[in-house]
Image 1 (spheres, helix red, strand yellow):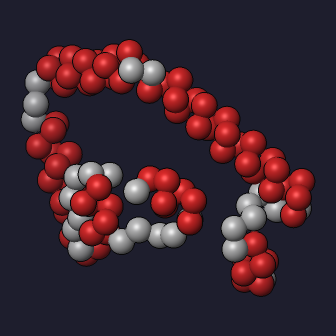
Image 2 (cartoon, helix red, strand yellow):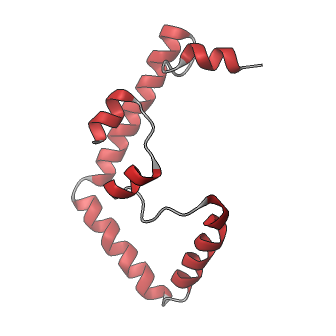
Length: 105
């Protein structure tokens, strides 16, 4: 799925994003602020030391798996792509370039 999205550049629906586990939940836009606040309030009630330890445990596990190096690598590739697009087309992106140029006023 990730390669399909990357290679086609298509947008994903909220249902697809939820089904792939990229997000925890999908809510109607008019409920977003209230649900975000409710989640933040629930987390804020947890013991601060326990939260710090849980975050540290998760982050250390990701680091051991090479997550930080992977993120840095992807960022480098991403920036190289913008540089290429800028040198090829004069804009930092190539996807939908003509459409974007037409919409600039």
